[in-house]
Image (cartoon, rainbow, N blue to C red; front, side):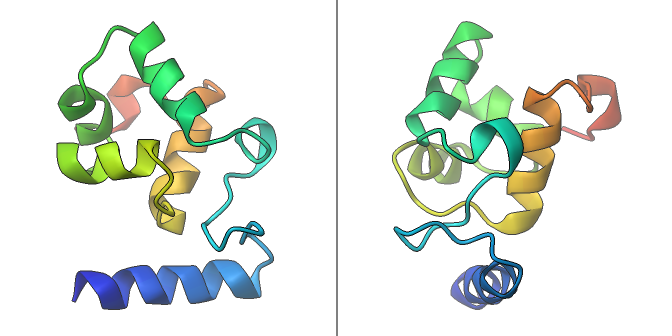
Amino acid sequence: MAQDFNYQTTAVAEQRGEIDHDGGAALAGTMASTPHSELKRFRISKRESQEKFWGRFGVTQSSGSRFETGLGIPAPVAILVKLYVKGKLSDGDLPG
């Protein structure tokens, strides 16, 4: 089921031109040209654990860890992270 979700979001992102050359979903805007390791640096700069940081986006710690090491981020999560990093969403806007 999770594979189906990832495949479906990847297919939608591919149709929209949001897939990078490595096959992962690219984050638009400032995050688009930034490697996934930048997400880890951002999280660490906030002094947050993977569990706390990724939990605000409805993502488990283990999935967050995989995202930080290069696994494609599903489009809905990528959008939320992008808005959060850009300051368009705050902790109060997110359920986690």
